[in-house]
Length: 230
Image (tube, rainbow, N blue to C red):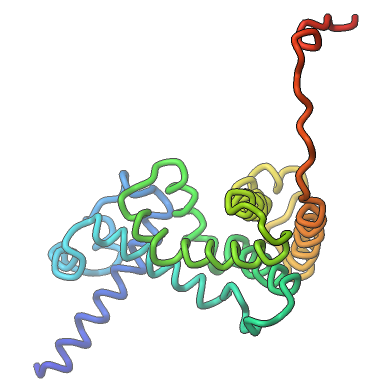
């Protein structure tokens, strides 16, 4: 066997392990997954995990990274929009691509379930995922939101507005079991995704336009002792 054939065989095995591991990790989580089950599903020798990924932690970290890159490449945050496009348009595109990543059946089926588990039981792999994939997206959203807020808006205010936008999007992903019972559906179609995009965009823009700070009323000693009317 020549080197190219051997290298090709290793690549096939590596891909099979990543695919099998994505299914197993999504189904049972990192803690309950076993190397033996993953290798059986991939049709690979147990030693192959050590060869390609060192251990289960290394395999899991790579699966998260690959699935994250796949979601990002399938639905990029800017969707090819020019950097100098109006901020309102860039926000809408960001929201739509984010919704597609977390609600699209082809992506969310595995990556979404793995990420949901990471939110409840984070592993060391999350640090790398945040650094390589999530932080750049957060920076992009902060830049968009900052350009929509008045000049001189404190960075903490920009961050909170950005997180509120993300929270609206993730609600539809993490609460799908409840939402599917309130409004039975097997998946979101393109029309529904577009409706959600427009709603979240309009809602967020309205909040950003009304973000001027309001004076805080000081509580006086007398007001704090005011009895509750019955």
